[in-house]
Amino acid sequence: MSQASVIVVGNEKGGAGKSTIAIHVTTALLHAGAKVAVLDLDLRQQTLGHFFANRAAWLAANSAEAPMPIEHPISAAGDALAKASPEDQVARFDEAFAQAAEAAEFVIVDTPGSDTAISRAAHRRADLIVTPMNDSFVDFDMLGVVDPVSLELKRHSLYAETVWDSRKQRATAERKQIDWVVLRNRLAPAEARNRRRLDTRVQALSRKVGFRVGPGLRDRVIYRELFPFGLTVADLSPTIRPVPMGLQHVAARQELRALMTALGFNGLDGAERIAAE
Ligand SMILES: Nc1ncnc2c1ncn2[C@@H]1O[C@H](COP(=O)(O)OP(=O)(O)O)[C@@H](O)[C@H]1O
Ligand SMILES: [Mg+2]
Image (cartoon, helix red, strand yellow):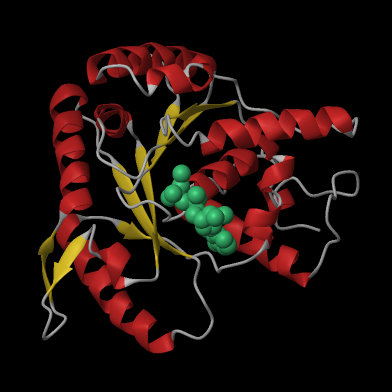
């Protein structure tokens, strides 16, 4: 059995920041010297696949070097696979997953914003599920239901159910527990009241369904503007600097570092580099 740690970035809500978190966690782990394999299960959008294709092209064009993850066949076949039956998709996923877990120390899986058979299959394999959500009751709705009058938390909802099922299956099949971290993404500075209300519900839900609440990421241009180069703030260095460095970038690195620590990756060699400038 392979000992790779499997990190699944999931949320049945689109636009929550799954792919953004996946590329940032992957590049941070790569710079920490880890062997990382990536699987992009968003067969239509293929954000993760496109990001690493951009990365290879940018590095080659600029004669620069940065660590790459182990490439995965499921990405190349993504387009055709999107039209295949769920059974074929899961079979292809199982095969790619086995290869990835054999070759790498970490397998990072990016998932689509919908409930698909391969997304479920990946959730069942997770050691850690990372769920980003926007600071919004619209996103919270995927996790928990609040009373429309009192805003009290009533029960968990769709995506929390998916994670619950995955945990049950994992525990039965392998006697392993799945750790689950939920974090707020795209935090805006001027939303104090909405955030306080949401905070209370997220904390209540975290006790009810058993997830940890991770540190949030602010809404920052730097989290999206490096995408066409296939780079993240974790890559920026004196030789890799496609945009001028500013204070925002230093703050973003610190946020990314806090996230990596909360996910349990602070012990990795070279992790300090992420926050250093
Ligand atoms: N912290 C952030 N700051 C700025 N933009 C962000 C941040 N997180 C995500 N985005 C942007 O929000 C959009 C949705 O993010 P994405 O990672 O594609 O979500 P998902 O994969 O869950 O659908 C993208 O345009 C992305 O660049
Ligand atoms: Mg995505």
